[in-house]
Image (cartoon, rainbow, N blue to C red; front, side, top):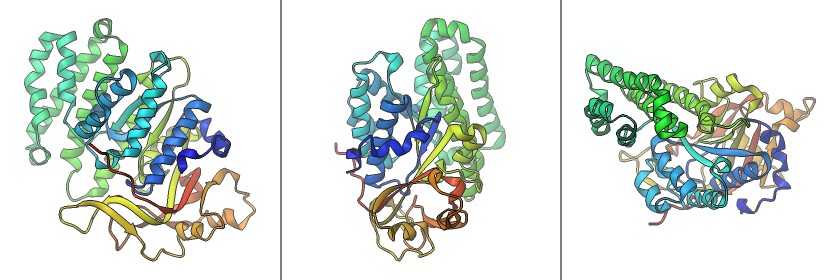
Length: 396
Protein backbone atom coordinates (compact mmCIF):
# COMPACT_ATOMS: atom_id res chain seq x y z
CA UNK A 1 0.00 0.00 0.00
CA UNK A 2 1.57 3.36 -1.00
CA UNK A 3 0.18 4.94 2.18
CA UNK A 4 2.44 2.63 4.20
CA UNK A 5 5.60 3.99 2.59
CA UNK A 6 7.96 5.09 5.37
CA UNK A 7 9.61 8.48 5.82
CA UNK A 8 12.92 6.69 5.41
CA UNK A 9 11.91 5.43 1.97
CA UNK A 10 10.68 8.90 1.05
CA UNK A 11 13.98 10.48 2.08
CA UNK A 12 14.82 10.22 -1.62
CA UNK A 13 12.54 13.25 -1.91
CA UNK A 14 14.75 15.42 0.30
CA UNK A 15 16.09 17.38 -2.69
CA UNK A 16 12.53 17.79 -4.02
CA UNK A 17 11.43 19.12 -0.63
CA UNK A 18 13.92 21.96 -0.86
CA UNK A 19 11.92 23.52 -3.72
CA UNK A 20 9.08 26.04 -3.30
CA UNK A 21 6.81 24.20 -5.76
CA UNK A 22 6.56 20.45 -6.37
CA UNK A 23 4.46 19.07 -9.24
CA UNK A 24 2.95 15.63 -8.66
CA UNK A 25 1.76 14.09 -11.91
CA UNK A 26 -0.25 11.01 -12.86
CA UNK A 27 -0.23 8.89 -16.00
CA UNK A 28 -4.02 8.46 -15.76
CA UNK A 29 -6.71 10.38 -13.89
CA UNK A 30 -8.10 7.23 -12.30
CA UNK A 31 -5.32 5.10 -10.78
CA UNK A 32 -5.54 4.19 -7.10
CA UNK A 33 -1.81 3.81 -6.49
CA UNK A 34 -0.99 7.20 -8.03
CA UNK A 35 -3.54 8.95 -5.84
CA UNK A 36 -2.47 7.17 -2.66
CA UNK A 37 1.20 7.85 -3.28
CA UNK A 38 0.54 11.53 -3.95
CA UNK A 39 -1.32 11.70 -0.62
CA UNK A 40 1.66 10.05 1.10
CA UNK A 41 4.19 12.38 -0.55
CA UNK A 42 2.14 15.46 0.42
CA UNK A 43 1.98 14.25 4.02
CA UNK A 44 5.75 13.71 3.99
CA UNK A 45 6.42 17.17 2.51
CA UNK A 46 4.11 18.84 5.06
CA UNK A 47 5.64 17.07 8.05
CA UNK A 48 9.28 17.19 6.97
CA UNK A 49 9.72 20.14 4.61
CA UNK A 50 7.16 22.74 5.66
CA UNK A 51 4.78 22.58 2.69
CA UNK A 52 1.50 24.36 3.37
CA UNK A 53 -0.74 24.23 0.29
CA UNK A 54 -2.04 21.49 -2.00
CA UNK A 55 -2.96 22.99 -5.37
CA UNK A 56 -5.27 20.86 -7.52
CA UNK A 57 -6.13 20.66 -11.23
CA UNK A 58 -9.63 21.80 -10.30
CA UNK A 59 -11.74 24.93 -10.50
CA UNK A 60 -10.63 27.70 -8.11
CA UNK A 61 -14.17 28.57 -7.04
CA UNK A 62 -15.07 24.96 -6.19
CA UNK A 63 -11.92 24.64 -4.09
CA UNK A 64 -13.12 27.42 -1.78
CA UNK A 65 -15.87 25.15 -0.42
CA UNK A 66 -13.39 22.33 0.17
CA UNK A 67 -10.85 24.66 1.79
CA UNK A 68 -13.55 25.91 4.14
CA UNK A 69 -14.16 22.33 5.21
CA UNK A 70 -10.52 21.48 5.88
CA UNK A 71 -9.91 24.75 7.77
CA UNK A 72 -13.19 25.10 9.70
CA UNK A 73 -15.06 21.80 9.41
CA UNK A 74 -17.98 23.57 7.72
CA UNK A 75 -20.27 21.17 5.85
CA UNK A 76 -20.14 17.48 5.05
CA UNK A 77 -17.14 16.52 2.94
CA UNK A 78 -18.85 13.83 0.85
CA UNK A 79 -21.72 16.18 0.05
CA UNK A 80 -19.32 18.99 -0.88
CA UNK A 81 -17.34 16.69 -3.16
CA UNK A 82 -20.44 15.35 -4.89
CA UNK A 83 -22.13 18.72 -5.27
CA UNK A 84 -19.20 21.06 -5.95
CA UNK A 85 -16.49 19.11 -7.77
CA UNK A 86 -16.79 19.35 -11.55
CA UNK A 87 -14.35 16.58 -12.47
CA UNK A 88 -15.20 12.93 -11.86
CA UNK A 89 -11.51 12.14 -11.37
CA UNK A 90 -11.31 13.89 -7.99
CA UNK A 91 -14.58 12.44 -6.67
CA UNK A 92 -12.81 9.38 -5.28
CA UNK A 93 -12.32 7.70 -1.93
CA UNK A 94 -8.57 8.32 -2.25
CA UNK A 95 -9.02 12.10 -2.53
CA UNK A 96 -11.62 11.97 0.25
CA UNK A 97 -9.06 10.31 2.53
CA UNK A 98 -6.48 12.96 1.65
CA UNK A 99 -8.90 15.80 2.45
CA UNK A 100 -9.96 14.18 5.71
CA UNK A 101 -6.30 13.93 6.71
CA UNK A 102 -5.88 17.63 5.94
CA UNK A 103 -8.91 18.43 8.11
CA UNK A 104 -7.53 16.27 10.95
CA UNK A 105 -4.10 17.93 10.61
CA UNK A 106 -5.69 21.39 10.88
CA UNK A 107 -8.03 20.61 13.78
CA UNK A 108 -5.47 21.39 16.50
CA UNK A 109 -3.60 24.20 14.72
CA UNK A 110 -3.91 27.95 14.48
CA UNK A 111 -5.07 29.17 11.07
CA UNK A 112 -1.60 30.53 10.31
CA UNK A 113 -0.19 26.98 10.54
CA UNK A 114 -2.94 25.12 8.66
CA UNK A 115 -2.59 23.33 5.34
CA UNK A 116 -4.79 24.65 2.55
CA UNK A 117 -6.52 23.37 -0.60
CA UNK A 118 -6.53 25.59 -3.72
CA UNK A 119 -7.73 24.89 -7.28
CA UNK A 120 -5.68 26.42 -10.08
CA UNK A 121 -7.83 25.49 -13.10
CA UNK A 122 -10.25 27.80 -14.94
CA UNK A 123 -12.76 25.93 -17.12
CA UNK A 124 -16.08 26.63 -15.37
CA UNK A 125 -18.29 29.58 -14.35
CA UNK A 126 -20.51 27.81 -11.83
CA UNK A 127 -19.70 29.41 -8.48
CA UNK A 128 -17.62 32.57 -8.93
CA UNK A 129 -20.53 34.96 -9.45
CA UNK A 130 -22.46 33.85 -6.37
CA UNK A 131 -19.38 34.13 -4.17
CA UNK A 132 -18.47 37.57 -5.54
CA UNK A 133 -22.00 38.92 -5.05
CA UNK A 134 -22.04 37.61 -1.46
CA UNK A 135 -18.75 39.38 -0.82
CA UNK A 136 -19.94 42.66 -2.37
CA UNK A 137 -23.07 42.51 -0.24
CA UNK A 138 -20.74 42.87 2.73
CA UNK A 139 -18.13 45.33 1.44
CA UNK A 140 -20.01 47.41 -1.19
CA UNK A 141 -23.78 46.83 -1.49
CA UNK A 142 -24.13 49.75 -3.89
CA UNK A 143 -21.60 48.30 -6.34
CA UNK A 144 -23.21 44.88 -5.94
CA UNK A 145 -26.44 46.35 -7.34
CA UNK A 146 -24.47 47.78 -10.24
CA UNK A 147 -22.87 44.45 -11.30
CA UNK A 148 -25.59 42.01 -10.17
CA UNK A 149 -27.09 41.60 -13.65
CA UNK A 150 -23.70 40.93 -15.26
CA UNK A 151 -22.65 38.29 -12.74
CA UNK A 152 -26.02 36.55 -12.76
CA UNK A 153 -25.78 36.36 -16.54
CA UNK A 154 -22.29 34.88 -16.30
CA UNK A 155 -23.37 32.23 -13.81
CA UNK A 156 -26.18 31.09 -16.14
CA UNK A 157 -24.35 31.26 -19.47
CA UNK A 158 -23.76 27.97 -21.26
CA UNK A 159 -20.48 27.08 -22.95
CA UNK A 160 -22.30 26.78 -26.28
CA UNK A 161 -23.85 30.25 -25.90
CA UNK A 162 -20.43 31.66 -25.06
CA UNK A 163 -18.77 29.95 -28.03
CA UNK A 164 -21.41 31.31 -30.43
CA UNK A 165 -21.47 34.84 -29.01
CA UNK A 166 -20.94 37.80 -31.33
CA UNK A 167 -17.53 39.35 -30.84
CA UNK A 168 -18.91 42.76 -29.82
CA UNK A 169 -21.04 41.17 -27.08
CA UNK A 170 -18.12 39.09 -25.84
CA UNK A 171 -15.80 42.10 -25.72
CA UNK A 172 -18.41 44.03 -23.75
CA UNK A 173 -18.87 41.16 -21.28
CA UNK A 174 -15.14 40.71 -20.75
CA UNK A 175 -14.72 44.48 -20.36
CA UNK A 176 -17.34 44.52 -17.59
CA UNK A 177 -15.47 41.78 -15.73
CA UNK A 178 -12.17 43.61 -16.10
CA UNK A 179 -13.79 46.85 -14.90
CA UNK A 180 -14.95 44.99 -11.78
CA UNK A 181 -11.39 43.80 -11.19
CA UNK A 182 -10.16 47.39 -11.46
CA UNK A 183 -12.88 48.53 -9.04
CA UNK A 184 -11.69 45.97 -6.49
CA UNK A 185 -8.10 47.14 -7.00
CA UNK A 186 -9.00 50.79 -6.44
CA UNK A 187 -10.92 49.92 -3.25
CA UNK A 188 -8.31 47.57 -1.83
CA UNK A 189 -7.79 49.38 1.49
CA UNK A 190 -11.45 49.82 2.35
CA UNK A 191 -12.38 46.28 1.31
CA UNK A 192 -9.55 44.76 3.36
CA UNK A 193 -10.54 46.86 6.36
CA UNK A 194 -14.05 45.38 6.19
CA UNK A 195 -13.35 41.77 5.18
CA UNK A 196 -9.69 41.11 5.93
CA UNK A 197 -6.88 40.55 3.45
CA UNK A 198 -7.50 36.87 2.69
CA UNK A 199 -11.13 37.29 1.70
CA UNK A 200 -10.21 40.27 -0.46
CA UNK A 201 -7.52 38.50 -2.49
CA UNK A 202 -9.66 35.36 -2.86
CA UNK A 203 -12.43 37.39 -4.49
CA UNK A 204 -9.97 39.25 -6.67
CA UNK A 205 -8.80 35.84 -7.89
CA UNK A 206 -12.40 34.75 -8.48
CA UNK A 207 -12.85 37.70 -10.83
CA UNK A 208 -9.59 36.87 -12.58
CA UNK A 209 -10.65 33.25 -13.13
CA UNK A 210 -13.93 34.43 -14.65
CA UNK A 211 -11.95 36.44 -17.20
CA UNK A 212 -9.67 33.45 -17.87
CA UNK A 213 -12.62 31.09 -18.37
CA UNK A 214 -14.39 33.50 -20.69
CA UNK A 215 -11.22 33.87 -22.78
CA UNK A 216 -10.54 30.13 -22.78
CA UNK A 217 -14.03 29.03 -23.78
CA UNK A 218 -14.70 31.81 -26.29
CA UNK A 219 -11.35 32.07 -28.08
CA UNK A 220 -10.01 28.50 -27.86
CA UNK A 221 -12.93 26.09 -27.34
CA UNK A 222 -13.65 24.00 -30.39
CA UNK A 223 -11.78 21.92 -32.88
CA UNK A 224 -8.24 23.07 -32.11
CA UNK A 225 -7.44 21.28 -28.87
CA UNK A 226 -3.79 22.32 -29.15
CA UNK A 227 -4.61 26.01 -28.78
CA UNK A 228 -7.06 25.29 -25.96
CA UNK A 229 -4.48 23.22 -24.08
CA UNK A 230 -1.78 25.84 -24.53
CA UNK A 231 -4.00 28.65 -23.26
CA UNK A 232 -5.31 26.56 -20.37
CA UNK A 233 -1.81 25.59 -19.23
CA UNK A 234 -0.73 29.23 -19.40
CA UNK A 235 -3.63 30.24 -17.15
CA UNK A 236 -2.94 27.34 -14.78
CA UNK A 237 0.70 28.41 -14.48
CA UNK A 238 -0.42 31.97 -13.70
CA UNK A 239 -2.83 30.70 -11.06
CA UNK A 240 -0.29 28.33 -9.54
CA UNK A 241 2.16 31.20 -9.09
CA UNK A 242 -0.62 33.20 -7.40
CA UNK A 243 -1.25 30.51 -4.76
CA UNK A 244 1.41 31.56 -2.19
CA UNK A 245 -0.26 35.00 -2.03
CA UNK A 246 -3.16 33.35 -0.23
CA UNK A 247 -1.03 33.20 2.89
CA UNK A 248 0.26 36.51 4.26
CA UNK A 249 3.42 35.07 5.78
CA UNK A 250 7.07 36.10 5.80
CA UNK A 251 8.07 32.44 5.59
CA UNK A 252 8.52 30.81 2.21
CA UNK A 253 5.08 29.38 1.36
CA UNK A 254 5.65 25.97 -0.25
CA UNK A 255 3.11 24.47 -2.64
CA UNK A 256 2.41 20.98 -4.04
CA UNK A 257 0.57 20.85 -7.38
CA UNK A 258 -1.61 17.84 -8.28
CA UNK A 259 -2.31 17.36 -12.00
CA UNK A 260 -1.75 15.02 -14.93
CA UNK A 261 1.83 14.22 -15.98
CA UNK A 262 1.20 16.26 -19.11
CA UNK A 263 0.53 19.42 -17.09
CA UNK A 264 3.29 19.20 -14.46
CA UNK A 265 6.06 17.98 -16.79
CA UNK A 266 8.61 20.39 -18.23
CA UNK A 267 7.32 20.00 -21.79
CA UNK A 268 8.13 22.68 -24.36
CA UNK A 269 5.83 21.20 -27.00
CA UNK A 270 2.68 22.97 -25.71
CA UNK A 271 4.26 24.63 -23.66
CA UNK A 272 2.90 22.94 -20.53
CA UNK A 273 2.16 24.51 -17.16
CA UNK A 274 5.28 22.76 -15.88
CA UNK A 275 7.42 24.24 -18.62
CA UNK A 276 6.19 27.76 -17.81
CA UNK A 277 6.82 27.21 -14.09
CA UNK A 278 10.27 25.78 -14.77
CA UNK A 279 11.23 28.81 -16.85
CA UNK A 280 10.33 31.14 -14.01
CA UNK A 281 11.32 29.08 -10.96
CA UNK A 282 14.17 26.86 -12.21
CA UNK A 283 15.21 24.57 -9.32
CA UNK A 284 12.48 25.98 -7.12
CA UNK A 285 10.09 23.86 -9.18
CA UNK A 286 10.66 20.08 -9.01
CA UNK A 287 8.64 17.47 -10.90
CA UNK A 288 7.50 13.98 -9.90
CA UNK A 289 5.86 11.89 -12.62
CA UNK A 290 4.16 8.47 -12.46
CA UNK A 291 4.39 5.47 -14.78
CA UNK A 292 2.83 2.01 -14.97
CA UNK A 293 2.95 -1.09 -17.15
CA UNK A 294 -0.48 -2.74 -16.86
CA UNK A 295 -3.63 -2.80 -14.78
CA UNK A 296 -6.96 -1.08 -14.28
CA UNK A 297 -7.94 2.57 -14.04
CA UNK A 298 -10.98 4.79 -14.36
CA UNK A 299 -11.21 6.83 -17.55
CA UNK A 300 -13.68 8.15 -20.07
CA UNK A 301 -13.80 6.06 -23.22
CA UNK A 302 -12.51 8.22 -26.06
CA UNK A 303 -13.95 5.82 -28.64
CA UNK A 304 -17.48 6.32 -27.33
CA UNK A 305 -19.74 9.16 -28.48
CA UNK A 306 -20.95 9.65 -24.91
CA UNK A 307 -17.44 9.42 -23.40
CA UNK A 308 -18.71 6.99 -20.76
CA UNK A 309 -16.75 6.80 -17.53
CA UNK A 310 -15.79 3.21 -16.80
CA UNK A 311 -13.05 1.00 -15.47
CA UNK A 312 -10.55 0.34 -18.24
CA UNK A 313 -8.09 -2.55 -18.34
CA UNK A 314 -4.75 -1.74 -19.87
CA UNK A 315 -3.42 -5.02 -21.22
CA UNK A 316 -2.45 -4.02 -24.75
CA UNK A 317 1.08 -4.72 -26.02
CA UNK A 318 3.46 -2.08 -24.66
CA UNK A 319 6.01 -0.49 -26.98
CA UNK A 320 9.36 -2.13 -26.22
CA UNK A 321 11.09 1.19 -26.79
CA UNK A 322 8.96 2.85 -24.09
CA UNK A 323 10.07 3.74 -20.59
CA UNK A 324 7.09 1.73 -19.32
CA UNK A 325 8.54 -1.45 -20.83
CA UNK A 326 12.05 -0.53 -19.69
CA UNK A 327 10.85 -0.16 -16.09
CA UNK A 328 8.78 -3.36 -16.38
CA UNK A 329 12.00 -5.27 -17.04
CA UNK A 330 13.58 -4.00 -13.81
CA UNK A 331 14.20 -6.42 -10.96
CA UNK A 332 11.85 -4.54 -8.65
CA UNK A 333 8.26 -4.00 -9.74
CA UNK A 334 7.49 -0.77 -7.84
CA UNK A 335 10.15 1.86 -7.25
CA UNK A 336 11.20 5.50 -7.16
CA UNK A 337 13.58 6.52 -9.94
CA UNK A 338 15.61 9.64 -9.17
CA UNK A 339 17.14 11.38 -12.17
CA UNK A 340 19.43 13.51 -10.00
CA UNK A 341 21.31 10.39 -8.95
CA UNK A 342 22.19 9.29 -12.49
CA UNK A 343 25.90 9.21 -13.33
CA UNK A 344 26.37 11.06 -16.63
CA UNK A 345 29.07 8.55 -17.65
CA UNK A 346 26.69 5.58 -17.64
CA UNK A 347 24.59 4.03 -20.40
CA UNK A 348 21.54 4.49 -18.17
CA UNK A 349 22.06 8.26 -18.19
CA UNK A 350 22.46 8.23 -21.98
CA UNK A 351 19.27 6.18 -22.36
CA UNK A 352 17.23 9.00 -20.83
CA UNK A 353 18.78 11.71 -22.98
CA UNK A 354 16.73 10.53 -25.97
CA UNK A 355 13.03 10.88 -26.73
CA UNK A 356 11.19 7.82 -25.38
CA UNK A 357 7.50 6.86 -25.48
CA UNK A 358 5.56 7.00 -22.20
CA UNK A 359 1.98 5.84 -21.66
CA UNK A 360 -0.12 8.95 -21.03
CA UNK A 361 -3.90 8.71 -20.66
CA UNK A 362 -6.57 11.38 -20.30
CA UNK A 363 -9.43 10.21 -22.45
CA UNK A 364 -8.68 6.54 -23.07
CA UNK A 365 -8.15 5.45 -26.67
CA UNK A 366 -7.23 1.74 -26.68
CA UNK A 367 -5.52 2.15 -30.05
CA UNK A 368 -3.03 4.76 -28.88
CA UNK A 369 -1.97 6.01 -25.46
CA UNK A 370 1.71 6.95 -25.56
CA UNK A 371 3.59 10.14 -26.27
CA UNK A 372 7.31 10.81 -26.62
CA UNK A 373 9.09 12.35 -23.66
CA UNK A 374 12.63 13.64 -23.19
CA UNK A 375 13.15 12.37 -19.69
CA UNK A 376 16.44 14.05 -18.96
CA UNK A 377 14.68 17.41 -18.67
CA UNK A 378 10.97 16.70 -18.16
CA UNK A 379 11.01 15.05 -14.72
CA UNK A 380 13.19 15.02 -11.61
CA UNK A 381 11.65 11.80 -10.27
CA UNK A 382 9.53 9.01 -11.74
CA UNK A 383 7.52 6.62 -9.57
CA UNK A 384 6.72 3.33 -11.24
CA UNK A 385 3.96 0.84 -10.39
CA UNK A 386 4.14 -2.23 -12.57
CA UNK A 387 0.49 -3.18 -12.08
CA UNK A 388 -2.21 -0.80 -10.91
CA UNK A 389 -5.83 -0.80 -9.81
CA UNK A 390 -8.64 1.66 -10.46
CA UNK A 391 -9.36 4.48 -8.05
CA UNK A 392 -12.53 3.97 -6.01
CA UNK A 393 -15.42 6.24 -6.95
CA UNK A 394 -16.71 8.28 -4.00
CA UNK A 395 -19.63 6.67 -2.17
CA UNK A 396 -22.69 8.73 -1.28
